[in-house]
Length: 307
Length: 265
Image (cartoon, rainbow over the protein chains, first blue to last red):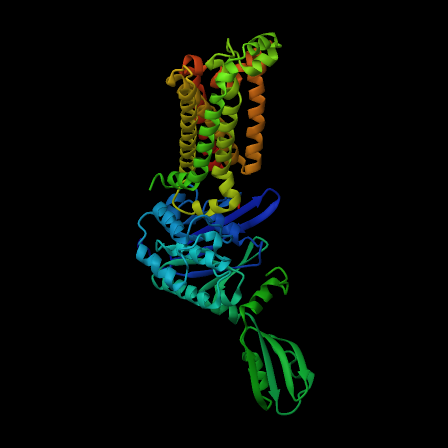
């Protein structure tokens, strides 16, 4: 593995744009993935996640703008980039006539310098069956072989397109551990997903893409902070509905029976807490915002394409 | 390691190629075994002499249809050999890039440190070997048949004719490869190669009789395959060179056009 300064950009795109004829791929994308981080790339199907990834690996040529991986040009230095990158395609297709073992050996020979012990280690951890012809394997079991193939050469950059699709929960957790280990070893991971809990769990930062445009890139923690929080306040005596009027960040106030008030708070809770100090509050229930809700805020409530 | 894709391709196709080879040997032996009964009918020759020139062209230009050379040209080399070689080669050529692309396996292959150029060249090399094997099978069949019925023909000339067949097949295989590499789509690649094959075949045949077409005959790969009568006169290096050169150009076009385009999924 090459030595590089922590935090340096491993992937950087500048106004990266791809049109497929009249169909939109991605538009003026400025994305940066830093050395040693796990960046979640979140968006509904068709938003442009896969297009971005395919541009980085030189499957596609940009219509405008440019990209850099390891500071190299995806087209001119494609081989060097691919040597240092492990890739799991979103729509994985393997050679059905080969066994997992034969396929991995083939990929390993094409890469060169693969430590076969590691490969077997990963196969054991993921409970992958390498002895059967790939065409007889289920989607999840094929996915495991795709994952081993991506991790096999211990690359400094992992690009994983919808990696956990089809994996059962136990194997998914094993996969999350593999990602965490890769991060601990200083590797960089770009992980596309429309599975929000997954991104929440394994990523440091999240880039949200919609209709080909990057909406935001933020730390998972700060995203949650800026998001909507649902609160339930239990008062000792029934409040009137105007009680929180004018308190900054509070919306959707709704009074229920038994002195219960529900509302949504955007951003800091402080103004609300100050306002509540005047009352006798028995209980305060806060629902931790899931990324689903964060997502909802960015997507204007339209999640019907988000799979 | 260089040669991995080449080796993998041949390994994947070895069973299929073995069947083609076995079938070809048997077919060639059977055709040759018909010869004694064929040459025993002198009327055939007279019949053909009275036939219209266009029909004669279909059966070949050889002086005597009942001679071993005339017989093998008519029954094998004018039609069946090109057909078999071209079908196999076009199948391989269209599969090399377009087929892998349609099955989705190209994506993972090209995520490995393997250049598109190397992929095309190794696939093309596998196609050359495939044509070589088929050529050898055809030669074996004819040689074995000739031993059984005592046809008097130089082995070298038989080899010249089957090598010409391999070069013709390679030309069309390279065409199919180039179309698949340029645009993608296995169906398109096979379709265009097939149409070009039929058109240039007819051009070569009618070029021998239709005056208007005659000057255009050298535009047909079939002219370089059979025009110099390799079975009677041995390999014409110039003609073999044209087919080889054409194949090289088409493979080079496959490399450059594939390098320029997006890879679909």
